[in-house]
Structure formats: structure tokens, C-alpha cells
Image (cartoon, rainbow, N blue to C red; front, side, top):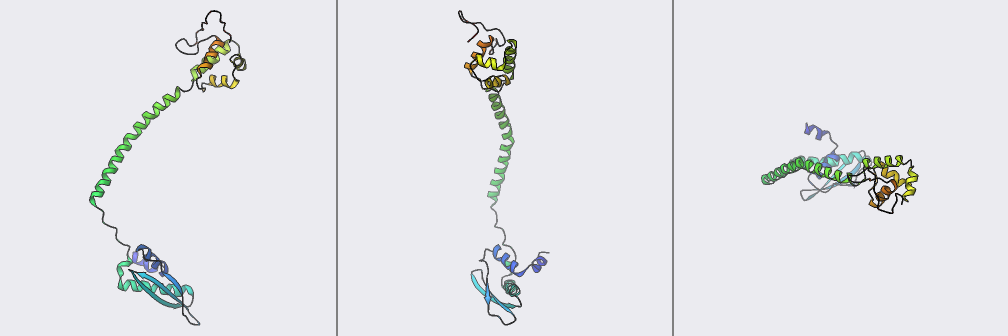
Length: 212
């Protein structure tokens, strides 16, 4: 089947393929002496260190080029037929193959354990990130305490001298905890927002009211 394919392949392509497989220089084609009715083509090719020149003629430039390429292939077929087949792959050292197998096996073992480690790390990171924000429970408590005093978000923001979007973020649970702001919110609402006493009335020292 391979012989049939090679036989039907364009001689120019076939010669170039042989040179590429065996890492020979690319054949050089140029015009040569012809006749009134035929074009002449010369090819210079280096095979196994030997520079060879071939001439051919044809009715067209393409035909003469194909003919001269076929002359080279015929020469190879007769004098060095081994070049018609791709070079054999080098022998592989068994010790190297064994090392590669061992490496692949170790790599597979590492991959099997890697997801477990990654999941643990992900869980730790998730838990850590959960504590970065104040959370929904804090937000709901803050909102309920504000509504109990019939305060709007703008009213509460004015009491603690903060922007309205700060109150919005705290009530949504997405705010990063700022202890100073939380303290002002507790004083403005008169309620504990942190710790075990969260939701219970906040006691103030003498001479201090619930306002700021």
C-alpha cells in the first residue's frame, strides 16, 4: 500500500520528502539548456555527502522539473534504496524506560493525593475568608435593631457619621469588620452586635447616653 502511494506521489514532493526525512539539503532547481520546443531543468542535490547534478527536458517547466526529480529518485532507488524508507528510530535504553515508568507511576500517585490536599487547603481558605466579612447574621441583627428604632439607613449613617453605603454593606453582611465602626453602631442603637451578648441591650457608663 505504501509503495502504491509513493508511486502516485509527485516526484518533486517525493524527493523533497526523502531529503527532509534524512535531513539532506533541499534540492536546488534551476533552468538548464533546452531546445526550441522543450524547457531544460537542472537539479543539484546532496545525498549522503555527495553532490549530484541531473538534467532533464520537458514541454513545460513543470514537466521538466518533475522529470529531473524523477531521475534523482531513480538514482536513489538503484544505488541507495534504503533512503526510500524513513530512518529507523534509535533504540531506547531500557533503564531509561524503567525510570520513565517509575516517574509516571509516582506522578500518578502524587496526582491521586493532590486533590485531597487541595480540597483541605480550599476548605481552610474558605473558612478563613468567611471570617473576613461580618456575615449575614450580623447584617440581619443590625437591620432589625435599626428598624426597631424606626431609623432609615440614612438616619443611622448620620448618627455614626458614616456614608449610607457603609450601612448597606454591613446589613448585607459583605462589609469587612471595622471594630471602630461596629462600636459606633452599638452605641447608636444601644445594642450589642458582637459576642455572646449580641442582640441584648448595651449598658453604658455613668454620664454617657446612648447617643454619640
